[in-house]
Image (cartoon, rainbow, N blue to C red):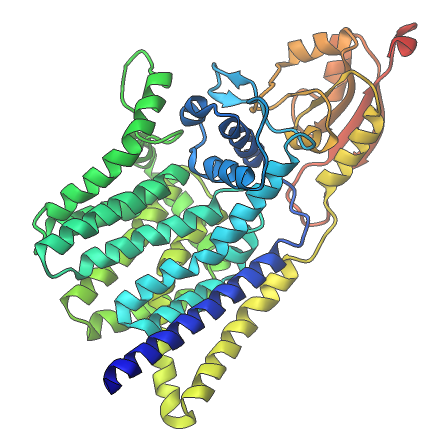
Length: 520
């Protein structure tokens, strides 16, 4: 009885510690969200998809270029808060996209999107704990959760209308299910673990297809003893039951002349492999650049602890521990390769650091044990927590400090110049029009797109009242003025802050012809 009571007390302390870490993670992510982060171009499309989902247009959400998971979460959160869209945004079939969001109309969706990102950013410490506990017990799990809670860039991205925050949660959830599979001892348990991997992986797949980097090594585990293929069949079953209807709709809506089946939106698996094999030099260059991004954004201290933890766990663990270490390292390496096959992106590359966090928990627990023999357990824990806080919180505070945002300044000028005019806004960057409101079209590779000739005709007919152009992008104001025969009057040039890698915004108004002023 005493042993059982002691076990319950230990489990209670672990649960309280984990709850405190979740609260800390939530507080730090709220801190990271305090700065006015301008919405990204992809964020405009996520809000449009969320509006379509809220209005019941699920078929087009499934057929869109953007994975449906994050917009669906946003729509569900908005519905829980009492918002329901009266109509879906206009579907653009030739582009497989919706018209992008409107700042005033979709304000409830924006709040819901930020709430979803913050929620999953804080909850990601739970699967991190599960993987760490599988590696070395509850204490390793707690250190893993704490390391992720204090990851400064993971906290910052929880304040964006982007997929990374929710994706990292489901990515770690898939890794946690695969960790269970790596430790199974009986075939029946392997079958259940395989189904869990399939379901968790499908949920992550709905948000971003890069989760395939975890599913591939998990599939290899499913073929090994003791499950002998049962786990692999369970994975396939769990994936097919959830992802099958989505992929059927996606391919039915987008069937091309070849009739080839596409597994992932935007980036088919064959395309990823081809981009690496057809241009190996470019792939290696992106890989090296992404490794540099990983060192900068993945937190060098945590990465060093993770690599050390991999060695320690491999040397001291048994067969199941080594399988789990191999699983984590293989998933991280494959994930880095998948991302590097198509792009250089520090936000997505952060996922490598997220996958490695449980290994850092192994190192932190070993250091705690070594320090506890001299200082005592409480002092050892306190010292490690202070070191982690000192190496992460200053970065978060510095990066989350509100700064001048030239995009929002330019949008304010566009909004002021548009006033109550009925004409549309013509922009290079759709975010300008999003924050400025009103009818608009874009001279960029998004929606409501017009080519230079169309733009000149719109300006010539007097349908455009304000232009917001990015310096150095074609067509420029002079070319549009000549082609339209209208005089474009410069209003302002909004320069980016020193050191920012953005273009300046040039704001123009279209001078009315004689007699047009009264009509407007």
